[in-house]
Image (cartoon, one colour):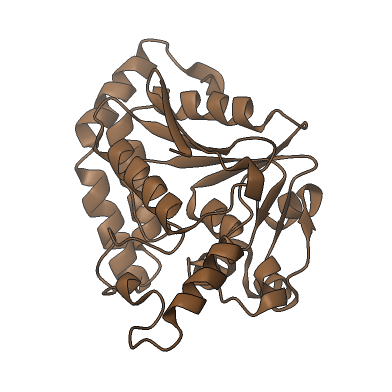
Length: 266
């Protein structure tokens, strides 16, 4: 097993560990990641996940040596490579080439990014809700050099996250994006010292886990659901989700009236 799952209270840590290939992913490891995050989502005791790469790197993308082997085996055959990964647009539980990249979970995932998060590894980081990045870590569509397409959400999530101008720059050139620039363009949320991403992500995860969960999850889902909707429909679905959380909000209001959380204290 090269995907390790740890539990620290209400936080689940999923670690990708393939040091010989900078945590690059093949189909077997993609399935392990997929299964790990589905298990996290189904675990009632888990509220937030931290996605981490061992040995100084987040993920170097798809394992190109494994991909070359697949291509050789497919040559002369009738079945196209990755035919088993086709899926319907409505299926938000489908397995992606990199594993969990097509999932829409009900709980937040925070990426702890160290070293390389490139090509499919960058797409996995984009799949997460937030990214904590070490000062010497970097992103990049490095697969541009070899003609390998972005098929794990990179062309979708990147423009939505940083805007079309920045996204086209990164997608077309494949250039390296270091932490300071990533923070400036909104590609990451926090920059921390080298070696500190995992612990910083855990601190953030514990903070999220301490909040009232029903409301936080409803707001998160509303933010994801609004993209394809006209404004009026987006506002209506926000209200419909929020209405289900009114009781939790009233409990919070009573706590505030009793003196808790005054002056912006968390």
